[in-house]
Length: 458
Image 1 (cartoon, one colour):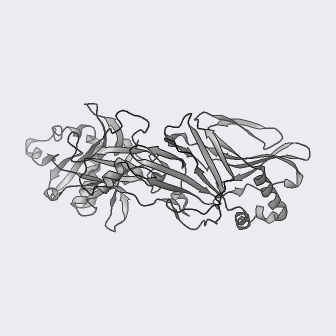
Image 2: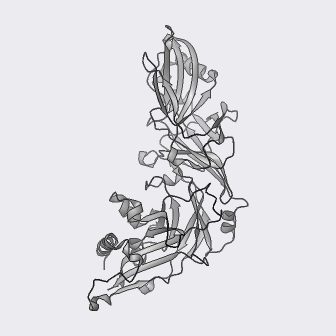
Image 3: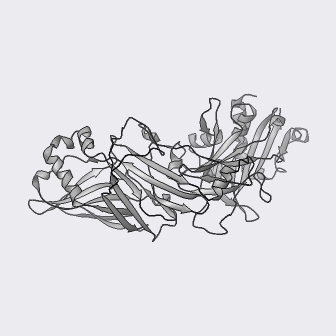
């Protein structure tokens, strides 16, 4: 049977039996006795799991679809996964040509960073954080690619080191776009910058007004900022740079003493923003799992950013070489190492990667199909935490197409668990989440990972 025929059969069966097929006695219940013999079921597979360290992630590309929408920020200390640091490198450009000729005095200059609340992770609300703002000392290339392991060059003396308390509450925001102030509120961080920086922006305009119309001239004078946490916490913040409210806001008064504002924004297609990640697993269970060299661990680990990722290997499926897969479901249980501590919640969406015939890492076909048809991953594929009849937390995933492709030699029998953000299936979305999960492998004594397969003999 060719793959197109198998896919049609698998997709139809998934739609009809998704909820029911966890009970194999239901499968084929409506068939004639002579047909029922062609339906088979097995759940006796042994799955091998282990943990490996990830390669750096792509966090900037010239292609807009491969650019981050949200940026993580912080230095998070996790007793299981160790220390994870997320920093931001960012360029900015003036929004329009200013009217500094009418400038009388500078009031202030503020870095405004809107929050992405759904990307907050761990302990954040009411927690003390601090942000170091550093001047970049290199020009980032908008036509290049940047990975999370690349360290940007920046002046080690911070422009400012700002301490603040994280909150998801909306804060009042006053803008001056016309003759009257515009007041609104939204969750964001306001980082005051020194007036000397505002002076340099204004002075450069008077020295060379072309800098405000020529991108290369401006970026040569102001290469951008490096933002990193100067405090360690048990949480990670989420920031969006694409908001129209994000940017460097220079407030001044004109000759009639009217408040004005000049914006330098981050959402221009001519600027680069990329994330830097660091992970230190020293002294943690993750480090032990990586170092033990065992390819069949009882517990394995999955993490966002460029952290640890879980790998699982299917057993020999040669016994299924002459079948069409009706449904294959993978159940992986949560290993509660923190004994009820809810500081670090389990990942809200896991997906699976494998290797195609060209050796490239790709999402398994079941994930690709769900995404291409704009189907909800949680409904069509699964991969979300749920509680079974015994009250045990687990992830259930429908991998029928993938198993069929493995049988036919079109996909590797090894696959990887990664979390993604906001159900957005693209190569970069793991970089937008700090979520993680501790999971039971196939050799776990109480809750081994299980693969249930229903098939039709050909």
